[in-house]
Length: 410
Image: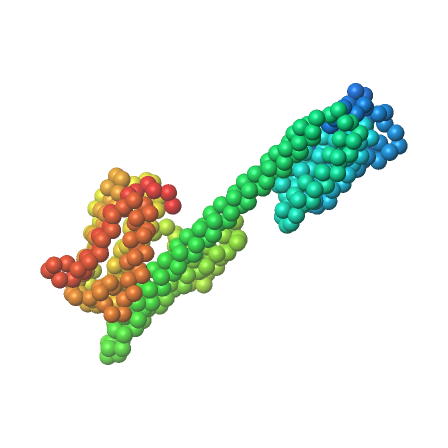
């Protein structure tokens, strides 16, 4: 008996947990049906009264009244699924209700039906408005004949009140559409920003690693007479290729829907490259690794780092790494063999980077350079509120400078 008893004790908690989920997943007709049932039940309460047009005396409910009340109440269940059908049925029931003098509480469903049409009707909105207005004319004439002493102004006032209900629904619809368009624009901007970010990362990774591999492979052609140096050069090419594969796998993992859930491909990247996966946020140690890789490609690089990185640098450290990476890539491509100096200074609130290269070539000025890398760096630094510059030096060569505020969110 212990098992069934525990099962019975869990039922209330299970219902409380799953009932809201079931309700949200239900069709709008199911969710709107309780409103129609509420109007239906309220119409039979003692002393319940609804809308009354004119001075016709109230008549007791009869068999026809039951049909009229149901005709005004139950169509509210489809007020969002088929708003025009709902309005047509409720309007017919309302007209009979008023002309017969029932004046039931269900008559107050007409403003709700009009508001629903204004808010949820997608097509033929003008046609429905015209048909409703034209249909009101014979109803108004019938009222005038049944109650000649009633002033026409009351019928006009009631019509304007119904127009107001429609207008409120139309305003709600325009607000909902504007909000949906706004959220769509935000989603599109977010996707564009993310695609741009991944494209920049791919540009940085592919350009730098492939450039280093090409330069190292070219140098290996002239080392056939020195087996030891040839082996070192080929080992450098292999290491650079493995690092490129790891970085590319990481970028592809960012596109994986399971990214961040523990089911991604980070571990596979480490296994594929034959080494432990490196941390994806570059640090000072990775800057030194980057410099060493460039040196193995045949580029003489002087590296100096001052200060201690702040505990919370946000995206500044990554941007500083990309600045150094792009500058060294340009040095390899357009000033290979020229002396290059890398200076990185960590302050309390900013990181300053300067990469200068002797010689005449640069990514911005060479015929083969698109300048996309430097433009991407400038945008990255600008987003963080920093300063970026790249250009030729008066004494010759090329220099890239960046001041990157630390602590900015990623």
